[in-house]
Length: 283
Image 1 (cartoon, rainbow, N blue to C red):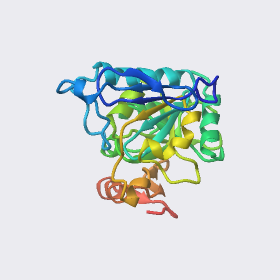
Image 2 (cartoon, rainbow, N blue to C red):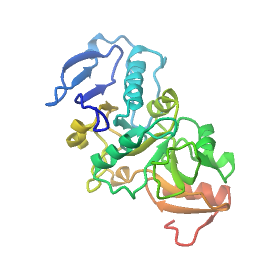
Image 3 (cartoon, one colour):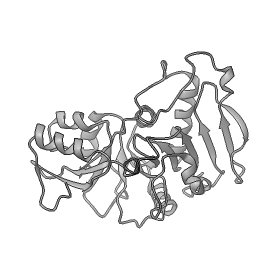
Image 4 (cartoon, rainbow, N blue to C red):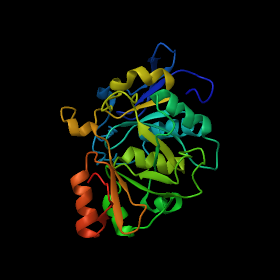
């Protein structure tokens, strides 16, 4: 488990096919490695892939392998653990963020794992566009949200009281994401609340496109979901993360981080919705 509660070691879940089976220990911490059966045992149509672009879903999402991985992740998150997950842009670290539970220890664990200073905000991951209205005060048309989400964009807006006060207590704003990745959307929906989300790497290191790239963090995590390589590892743009946009001021937008989708995002904001760039925006 994560430092948020007694450590039981790492469990790495690799969801490649139906019928996850327990294999040898996954690390020196005597954790459990849940391995898929050999591909030769999988019948046609049984492969469950977490593709880098998140565009594909298993024909039946209720099939055993997909559901078991989701349930394992949800159980750890509800227990206050930190879980590594694949997203549309990068591998991330997730923990609970709602005010209906006490996620303070989990949030602190994320900062310790990354070597973050606690004045650096964590984003929130949701499963549906409709959920944005519950956790943020939306001041843009619903069509704008649906044009940008799900996608490689983080939308910053005034936070609601539904989020835990220990999540970014130094700012009234929150960044909201809906990754264009079927697993992350299903995870957020099954979890039933907001997930704090940040990149799976030390603050001084490059972002991770493969689970092995943040292997040094594994002993501090409760669960690692291996969704395979994300994006094109040869392209520097793939490690830029999401484009972060401030939409907290009506009629305006500010680019906080250019990220990997700057051109498309600014085109939607300016050309379709006629928003004006805020002074000092890096757009």
